[in-house]
Image (cartoon, rainbow, N blue to C red; front, side, top):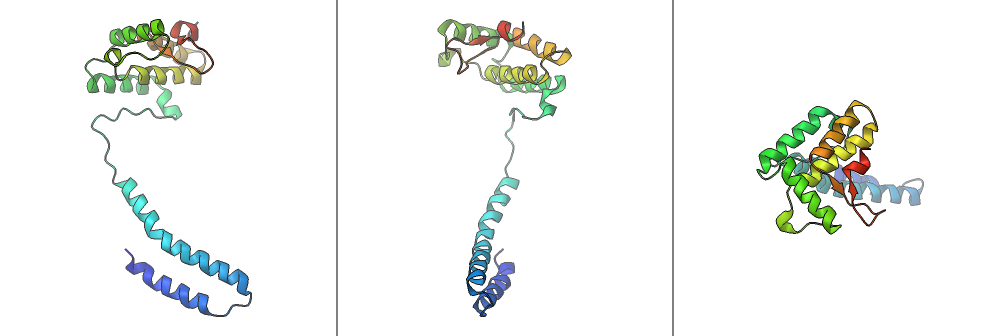
Length: 166
């Protein structure tokens, strides 16, 4: 991968060794060109690494754009969490969040259910995004079904779904 850059680096060095009309500006330009040519392989390696990253078997990451704010996107995320974690359900999430509310903070590891926090985060974003209407009602339905509870910096006690979906 360096071979194609070799002629450019050699010509840069030759170009930079010619006495320019404005020496200070030309010296800075030459140094910048040399630095850029030296940095290019590192950038290429980083980009090449990003291209070859393999997705996880159950990639359940939450997208942050408007396409994640649809009924189908929410249902798909829930389906993926059910597939990835057999313990994930409305009942287990409700129980986990009841414990969180009772304790006023994080739940013990034995009460934690993977996926509950993520799904509640997603449906809260849907509710916040739409505000009111059909999609907000859809989000509130899931917020109530999963018994969602959130910690916030503004309050000591967690925020409940009943407060969010009045």
